[in-house]
Length: 411
Image: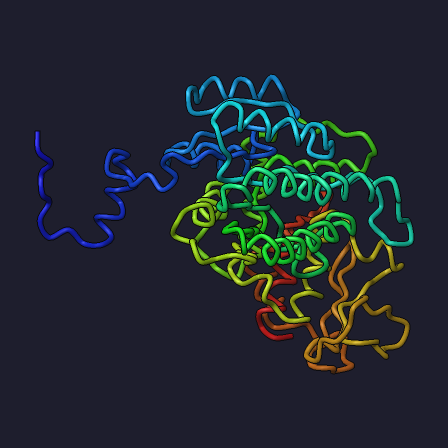
């Protein structure tokens, strides 16, 4: 039966139709063979499923054998599972060799495996933990480098291939994560650019993706461990309400409104970099962050404050009654200015205490009793009960909105 022609289709209609009807969706990875490390959950799982949807054969690499085997079986015959600890060269070498033995070649490596680190540990550089740092760097950086090494080993003779690594918006700015994690993601961006320069002569493209916050198990578990404030917390699968809560927080921080960033969106970015649509793209860090990482120093300072609020570390607790978000070093008597400085329009002090906001002095003014008009508006719209918590602890999301609105008004 011949296909029916649908007259007067708009571009949007064609786009929707192609998404919903898989028979009309072009297979952008037809005949390709891919490895996805850390492929059993979150962004990794979404990437596995999307690559298979577009015609690829995918080897899922992870250390969660039961979950990985079950996922591969559900996607059979297009997927197989191989145990792989990416920090072990023996495991990575075996992964690549097994893939080539099974499918004959390797076209795409997606270095997705990574760890955030122990969120229950103090994050100050003063309390630097060398063992924790080594662990994060070993998985995130050494793991990616080993993947590149052994993928290149089999791609160079064929003079083609594609390597994609997962970085982070924390890899292009500071204040969004623990020191080890942030350093590791900066390293991924640098490694990507350097390896791209070397392998380009062999027709191998090397790129990375830097997502903003996605409510995966990693991010939700980081929230859990901070809320519990204990060394040992249950890091099981997140509940639906936890995911929704995290997505709400991320939406509140985002500049682009009306959209929620999910694992599927990052998988789409990886698909673009893996497909022929990006045949002339190499050495590129694809930011999926609605311009968050392109922000100014002021946004960097804001992010430090927001992350500390999200983590449940009230600034007033650490600074005996108030911490400040200031530009350079604040000269206001008896107050402590925030680290970083350099924010020309935030030379006043934003005091956020555990009990109530002390005030916001705008544009370098010294009248700390003056409250930012936007802050007053947020108080009015959300209600003091919601903001101050009255017996149940303050609402972190509400505080995030307060600080963010102050930023948006230019204070």
